[in-house]
Image 1 (cartoon, one colour):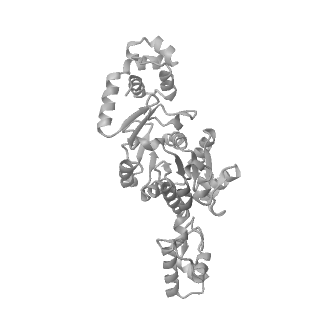
Image 2: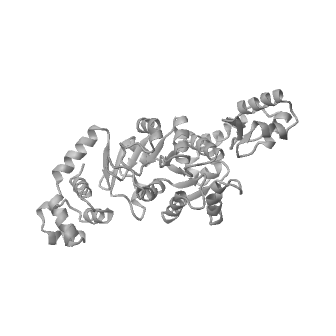
Image 3: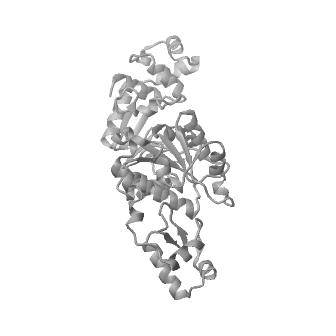
Length: 371
């Protein structure tokens, strides 16, 4: 690490020193040992109160910063500041970039084209299916999936990218060595091995409510566009979308049922000018440089290699929508016997037109052409 990076790291561990103070310290253009400065000089350099200047003088320690960085490096955690060439260039462009990033995993992913996939923490089956499938298909096109490791859409997006053997980055509202939510322990372990996990909060920092809106600017800042899968009318995803607009990023929204409150936020975004998207090609078409001739021909390749649907299968598929439908409801809306309907539902699953949920219930899969 550069000496200036250790200076920022030392400052960041002083109580009540925020991003603004860190930015002013970086802009000094030199390494300053604030423990050797007078409080008055610290006031002038960092534009802080007399009380803060006194605290910085008494608590600043470059030696402690070096020891922390060495300890974290031994644990597989890297520290990046804007002095580092590995600091992501896209983040440098946003109005309020993090001065320090802590990362575990593959740092190279921070420099590859990425799309952020975000949404509701309590999504519908439709939303989960879209997040999982679209993230998988985007990852198959060499797009890095960025999200926030939250319950619901975020977690499904990470899983989809990993299922494709693709790349994914999680931006946390806690330390990178803290598992949150607890049910994502296995996913977090896999992310650290196959993707990357990063945060602007030091290792060991427990999640706090205010951290999550702050980290949203990093999620959108790392990506070229933000895809909102499901969001209520009052949702943190709308905050991220708003930040994306301020950062000059594209915003994409997946439409849902007009009766679903979890799609109300997406519909509002579309009314405000977000691009309505119905498949990953609608997203990738905004970035011609990401679509090679090979990729363009393979986006829908899975659909064209499957056997065509029979008239009976089309009849069943026509009654299954984008929200989960129970087996009993499907049986009532079709004229087939129970035994034959089981056969048709199984065939539609094999042809990747629907998927089965607990219940049993069924839901239509997106991005597949009805043949």
